[in-house]
Image 1: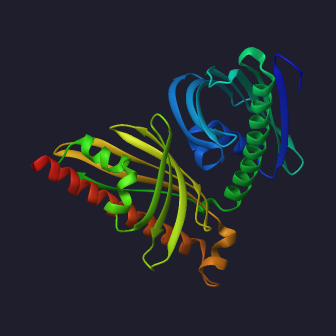
Image 2: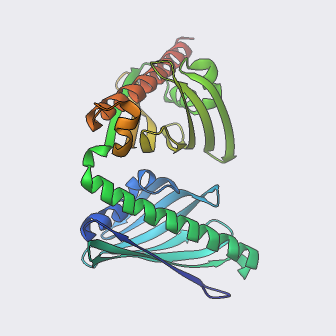
Length: 315
């Protein structure tokens, strides 16, 4: 790294997967929340040919920060260049490049960054450098794990949705979903919930949830609100059967009111299936269990949101 002004970093890793598969994981930024641990949510704002604008929410040294970036994707050379358009202080500028190359056994991935900080402050420079190093190492390790595990077992990725139709106002449904601070009173399957709001439209939630067999699982999540149409979340502490769990609640107008939908994306851990579910369990067993458990709780939440919104509409 240089001492002042522009700081440049370089991080590399070898991945036992084809370069095109690795490039695909990097190119599909909307999948990053269930691939990269630091990434909470990605909004695709605009697409112009091979360029796109993204708004990202991600952890930096334990804090959730948001910024807007432009990316240039080059599928031919397997490179993705990025540059922040609107940064989050103390970052003054940030950019870099993903470079994927063929290597013995699969691919070599290089992640480059260059950045500067507001007023060239030394303490801010150290803070950002630490965040870049931590996140780069985490992202490269997660990229390797995702590319190698999903190539070996694509069934580890599970996505599904459940919905209810509501004869009520979109705002009422959204408010029920957003007011997670009331869930321990409103939702029978939630036994404990602690909520903080570290920023505008941002929540951190720690929750104990009862499953059908009576056991209790503790999860931690970060939620980003886009009221009254949707809110998204990422679990930062997941049950041991999963390596990642992200989701979103959407509330869309329908013919007779609104349709409220719960969407889930889960990455399972095939290596833990037999340890956790028994010697005869398979990945399909795990998929059915997770699908049923998450779907049951989500649908229960949606039904209670429906009842609350329809009561409000009848007053």
